[in-house]
Length: 585
Image (cartoon, rainbow, N blue to C red; front, side, top):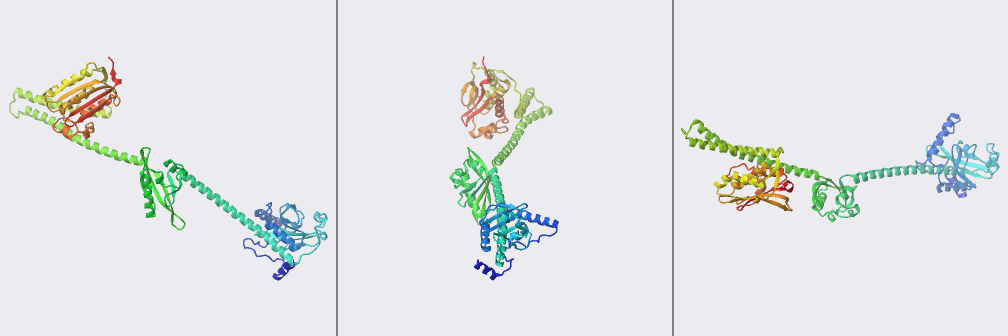
């Protein structure tokens, strides 16, 4: 005690001496308790508001406060020391050295007077003080000495007191009073520090919650995004992937992380991604490419973007990536290109068709006009009756040819527009074959061609459009006559079949020993407006519509028409009708 007192005397014996405190914990000078009752009520409310704002009431014991009360009791040489906070109706003790007090009624208590008195409130003998001599603490517990220094908030409001109590009358020395004030200020500093730490903790908690909420939103955005998203290290190993990536690769995240894409992506897309990332590292900027991946026997296209992820100093430390599927767009683009090519091909075919039609139509028209002009003007003088009949026959044949071409065009137009009306009825294939061969008999005889009817008379009837069947067979036989060299043979066969590739039904086949068609040209002869220049046009009449019309009429009745041919050997065209069209006799 002598050492402490001498130290305080050396530093000065002012009762308001204070220990050094940080600016944010040093309390301001408190306002004096006002005499006016209204002002006193306001003073009390401000004080209580500061007390409640401090958050000190009803908190757990703290070693710092216990050390202060122990030091106060030691300095002041008292058996009891308390840190008391004055609530509206009670005194609450944060620390109690020498006793086990928790709270006490405020009314007419020592502390109630102490918070309103300036400086150190000291009563040297409570038994002689009229204010306190009848209190229970004095009469029953033997309290005789009381001294306290005010504990203030940073705003100067008085929150409570640091109190020392003795059971004998006495007086504090000036150094003891100064120490009591300094220790009370230390209590105030502890409260301010607690509040500062509480506010800091609250700020940290708020920021932590905000950060977690932001991370949760970012994770939700990344995981629910309909695009692939990933982060890799500079060696190309995955550090993070989203669910879209898991779905695309067909692997859970734990089987992707730590691996390179080429470890599990076996298509060319894996190598393309590796090259894209290498180029991005060299360019040190984001790059985008459209990359194709093989999936389930098909293709999936992605627009992949790779970009550098820098640290705080701008050094690239990771590789970011996003991928947007563009398969539908790429397929649409391919279909658009294909449609454009088809349109161009169709346009070219129509141009070729018009050129062919102009030639085919001019030929009979020129004959009609020429012979009719000779007859009408007597350009060659009087014409004998035989010659007139010959010219008339030529005019008739030219008109018939012109009518056939026009009919073919109209038939094809109806079929393509879906306006062809079929009249189905029982049909006899043998009778249709005989009629067809009779129609081409003269043309075949002119070229010395052998016509063979190998259709058996035991075939059942078929339900079909007789006119359409006749036109199909006539077109096939006409083509055979037209492109079979003199001395050749044309054969018509028919029979029931039950083949796996074709199916059960009935077949009519027309074979010839003609010039044949190259295998690459076979698709062309079935194309509307399409002709094989060296096989079907040069040196022969016709618009090249026979086979397209024959196939269209066959398919309209649920059948199929196929052609097999070898150049220099001949051609075989097969007409197949399904079993549903067979009528049992």
